[in-house]
Structure formats: C-alpha cells, structure tokens
Length: 250
Image (tube, rainbow, N blue to C red; front, side, top):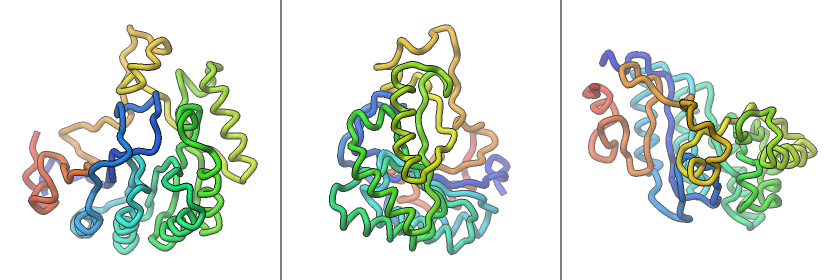
C-alpha cells in the first residue's frame, strides 16, 4: 500500500461548483448557476473500489449546491451505504427548486439512498440571495423522511462576536429551531475567495488564517473528488481510483 495514503479513512465529492447562492463569504469565489458535475456512476464505482481496499469511516457530498444534481448524489450515497460506510453526510443550502413536488421528490430520494445526516447551510450570507421558504419546506420534508438534519451556519470573526452578520444569523437559526432543527457548530469564515474580497474589514492582516480542512500531502486521510473527476494527481474519468492512489507521490 502506498505509504502516503495508508491512513485514508474518508471520501469527499464536490458534486458541482454550480450554486443557487451568491454568497459574499464563499471561499471558492463567484459561482454560476450551472456547470460541470460529477458522474454518479463513475463516482459510485470509485466508492466501491476504495472501500474494498481501505477502511472508510465517513463520506460527504457537497458543492456548490449538490442538489442541483440529486440523482448523482443519491448514487454516491447508495454505494456508501452498500459498502457500510457508517457516516454519510450531505451539505446543502436546501435551495434547488421552488416546486413543492420536486422538493418532496428529492427529499424522498435522499432518504431512500442512505444519506445519514444533512447539514443545512443557512445564515446571514446564504439568505442574502436564497429565500427561506423553499429551504424550510425542504427541511420539513427531510424530517418526514427520518433523516437527521441540522443547520450549519457560517460565523464571522467568531461564534460569540456580535457583528451584524452574526446577529442576523442567530435570527435565522431561531426560525429553524422553531421547526425542530438544532444547529451544528458551523464554520468560522477565513479570508479566502469572496470573503477576502467582500469582508476584508473583519480580518486582521497580521494574522495567519489556516483552514481546518487542509491536508498533509504526505499523510492523506481524505480523498476528495472534484466535479471534473480530478482527484489527487489524477483523474477518475481517465484511470481507476486505485491506480491513482497507488501512484500518488508528493
């Protein structure tokens, strides 16, 4: 086994970078409403192959807005369930359609696919461009499916800071608590992408901000697939994920 990936225990898929939001805190910068997305069949095969060779503890799908392509999301989670990955998470802003029938349909698909937990990105930044009502409707449908769902806010400066964005975020979280949704710890915004462009006044230029998601390239614990199939130093559309893992080097 390749020494650089011997401790691999997590799989992530950036399903698409297309997004329904235009958030000024987004670390990835500007998004379009459409774009590349991961092929669900190829992604599912990668999950099967990895799990036959590594002990995978968790899998996550996110974006962009992954539920712009729910069929592909569900194929990934179905494979994860079949391979007995215990933690199968989805991060979504909950806004992929205004049509109630489609919202119910997608929620049911997710429940059937084996998603074990959903983190719902709601806060002052998302709700500048994303309406609350379709997101609330989605949350209610997910709860009816019996899938765990919590809000996942983005905090500016710190959870405790009383800047205007955090105050608005607390109001929004209160609305979801009334529906029965508790909040996860969320994330602290770092100055990358749009956040650096639009929120620079809140960051200390003398402070080094480090993302908690950065990996040690010599000890890969998470393999993360991009929408175009890129992963580590290869592309899963061109070669098998096991070949990519075996040939990876720093």
